[in-house]
Length: 129
Image 1 (cartoon, helix red, strand yellow):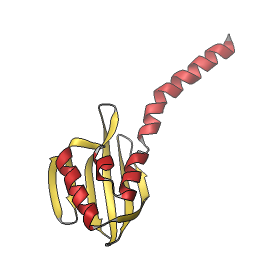
Image 2 (image 1 turned 60 degrees about the vertical axis):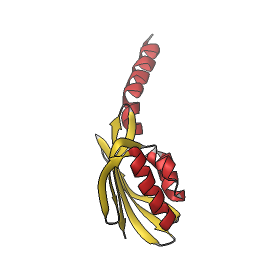
Image 3 (image 1 turned 135 degrees about the vertical axis):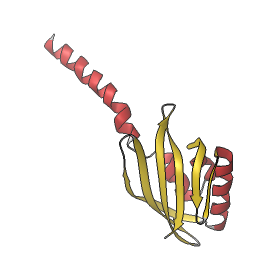
Image 4 (image 1 turned 30 degrees about the vertical axis):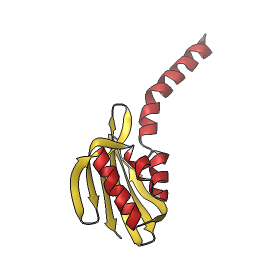
């Protein structure tokens, strides 16, 4: 009986903590999308309105507009690699990474918040390194 209640308590705490633990991680699809320049994959993680800064262009736009802007960026700067250099956060997550492209290196910053039970990008910055 003691073992059974211990197992129940363990799984109850594990289920309660699991969403918190998994939210702190940046979804691998975002990393993979940035690495190969797939604007559709990255934009699928955009919130309905996203604050987007690409080099000197700064705007708040819809998910579809953000995808098009990102697609144009990837056409001019073909990615060769992307690596996360720093990430963190509790209520919201952020990541800073280095994007290597055919036209130079860029610093990428994105902020994710939990919206409708899913981590979504609410801010994305791509600046010359």
